[in-house]
Amino acid sequence: MFLAHINPLQASIFSSLAVASLLLTFVMLGSHWLRNYVYAFAVQSWLIAALSASVGYFAGYPELYLIAILTALFRGLVLPFLLTRIIARLNVKREIHTVLQPSSSLVLGAFLVMFAFVIANHMNRQSLLAAHVVVLALTIMFSMKFLGFLMLSVRDEAVSQILGLLVLENGIFLGAQILVPGMPLLIEIVILFDLLIVVACFGMLVRFLVVHAGTTSSRQLNRLVG
Amino acid sequence: MILPDIFLQILQVLCVLLLAPLLQGFILKIEERVQRSRGPSLFQPYRDLWKLFHKECVAPESASWIYFTAPMVAFTAMLTVPILIPVLTDRPLPLSDMGDMLGGGLILTLGSFAIILAGLDTGNAYGGIGSSRAVMLTILAEPTLILVLVGISLLAKAMLPFVVNHLLLGSLSIYWSPAHLFLILAFLSLLLVETDRLPVHSSTHLEIYMIDEARILEYSGPLLALLKWASMMKQVILYTIFCNVFLLPWRMSQIGTPLGELGSLATLMIKFLLVALTVVVIETVQSRLRFYRYQEPLAAGFLFAVLAIVSSQLL
Image (cartoon, rainbow over all chains, first blue to last red; front, side, top):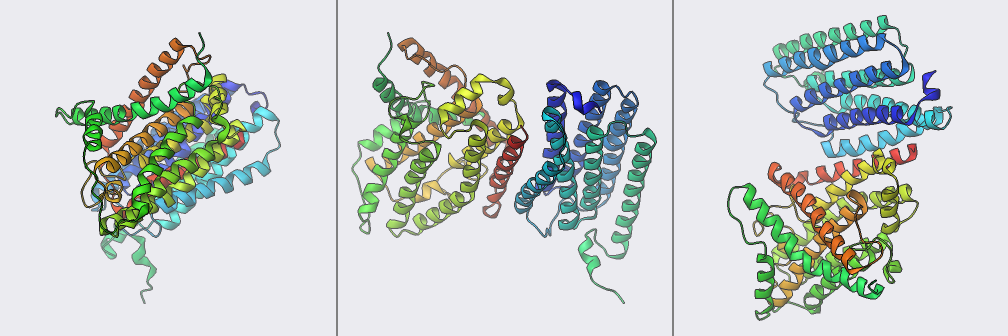
């Protein structure tokens, strides 16, 4: 395993990229505007692409370069493009009825990060410097998953729910890049196509919502219609 | 020649006392320049203070002793804090161990507590509103402040600002560690709130959303001058802590020669310049938040402080 003999420079590069992508998740959580979510997601995907390229370079996995290119292309360009198209067609620019105010969700997110850190710390079995990177990667992976769940549960707009799913997936991907860098290429491609299908399905769902419920907020779907 | 320690300590207090109006004037001037108008002179705050000290003191009939003592308490508190923090020298001077960072925070809060009481004292409606808003902000800012202090003490294993300064001087890897960078961001959001800047405070004072101005609306003459000077000094103290302890710990006088102190003063002014320019940029791009969204910048600060603590555990 290459994390067992990682040097401080690599450790700092990996951790700064991972921490920056965690911060971008908080940008999504703390903002009202749908467009900001998409931009933050795009930048986050570029950071993850940079991360997988650097892991590929330092650990000697040439296929990770291809994954990096695919990530930047699909998650960094195609998905944000599709999402901005969906947003542009809707008349929704921001979340209006939030269950949780952005400030409270930031504070809740901070506690989730602490929880993720506690879990990651329990799972750690590595030696000193590797432990630093492993715990950091695990913490950030878990916290991005929790924050994705948080976005899914406290946001009503369909677009922010898609982004919640995508953030969740980005978190898993980020952790996997650092912890098990030799993930087969085929799985990665499958996941990328999955994501495309998710966004396409949500696009359909949004259309359906607009036509049948007259709104894109999933709040309207809570009522039973007999 | 090495200056005696007690002289250096007095010099630190004098430095904060005399630089405070200059910093305020500089920020006001640059803000106006950014908006393409000329702005007041750099030395206008000095002239204002001079003018106010030469006016007579008019007090409302409902004022009690709290009204008259609050400005002295606030001003004295701001004179005390520079003894505890590294302003010019990066080593502890004789009285610096009177209190650590928590002690400094206590004295700073004591000053604003006195002003809050004074705002309530006269029974003026605006004073009450200002005091209640200020208390709400203090309540929101306090957890962040405490967490920043906890983060610093986890990083440096000490609560003394001098130790933190030496730690950051000593190793670049700690300076660039995520824990320290998050602490800088958290302290920056506190700095903006505590020095009456946007996005929480309005840029033009004396309007319906005022917070700090509302508390001192009843004051006039020398007492008003003391209060204004105290708030400018609070700004300088927070800037000093931000620069010398968190952001730019370099180039401070170590031995205490006159030349070294002068150089330390000059670099302090350059550091203030950089931070003030950052603050002006933030004030220019940000609009004021609605009253019920005050907690957002502070929640962001809290988040940064929590992240700092989590990442300091990773080291």
